[in-house]
Length: 97
Image (cartoon, rainbow, N blue to C red; front, side, top):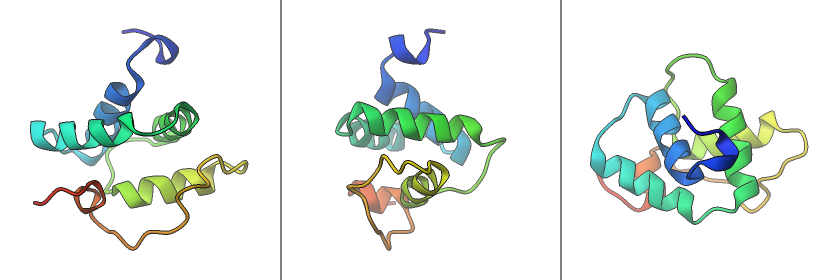
């Protein structure tokens, strides 16, 4: 496996996020991947570091991911996402269940 710096970061991050949530459908993968492709590299780095710090599967939504990663990182690199009431990451991505 390639290192984080040498890989397709949105792809690896989408796989990591969906692996933690336990959701492996192709539709959801491409929705999450497309969302991560629009993010800055510093945001992707922060989210990946946070996801690597989690142990095991847990129920986490995309909104939770940004909020918790922001709190986890005291330097707060994710300043452009300030608040979200979305509880389902597919809603945040514009998808439907």
